[in-house]
Length: 382
Image (tube, rainbow, N blue to C red; front, side):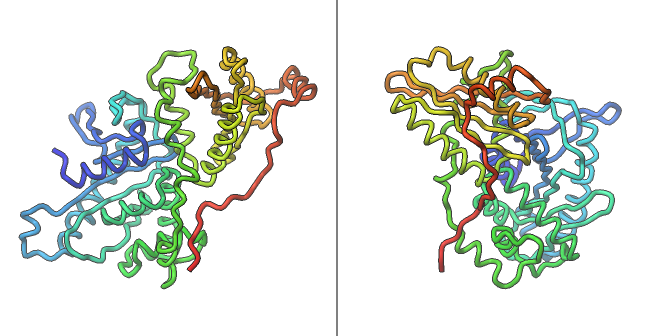
């Protein structure tokens, strides 16, 4: 039976990381061993992978005369660390097996290399307690210790799966390099502030926490959840597979808010052209870190019937020109008062194609893509 803390983290994770990539029930059978639990919670989005153990003090323990440090040493340093080490070993054995995610779909688990997995022990205490920040083992890597409230706040500030993953990689790197993982004098909020500041090569100082206080919430400038809601019903796919749209969701999950901000700007421009029913060239964003391009095609009313062919054709040519491995296509059209959005995902290695080269030379259909350095975070002036 799940504890209240486990239920809380499960709900938080499937809202932050999408239900498609969150697994609360990770029990499986090992031949000759029997039933085993992979972890209290698992999140896996291609290369972004998190394994969780979750602990809380029960009523009996809260009424005990044992002090908090003794509980922490027993439940976290000993039991939870042992469990998460076992989880990491089992993750390798689990490759290719299927788990039911929070969308109730059976999904084959394909974990990344183990050094890329974020190991997190979340604990809940009803009393103030200055805990160490983690545990390092040359065999298993770094295990994060984090208070439940602090984990919630990190998700509240960073929101996107890519940024949360990046934060924990920063946390791991800075604490190991400076041998501060067993230090209980560094607050989680000073670490978060240091990360938000962009200066990720040094330990936080007395001023780091101020970046959390002046952090500017600009969610409306990059939140595109409104167009992702019905994605699974609007994907163009040669297969009629209920999970085909996962690849598109995964590409969005890998984006930080700077990239999402640029995509939303172009969505607005494309939508304006569709509403006005005027011809407009496709809008594009390229994300080198995931080798994926995003193409947004505004379609005039008179061309609506050929939107599928148009979207696919533009994506193939764009992917070829930009030499990306993947492309997400978004086709926007209008019928009466209703806006319709279609999606497509293509993935393949690029090869020379004289026919496409000729098309690009004779009638170039795109705007030029320029490399730009983008700010992720903004702050209110003091």
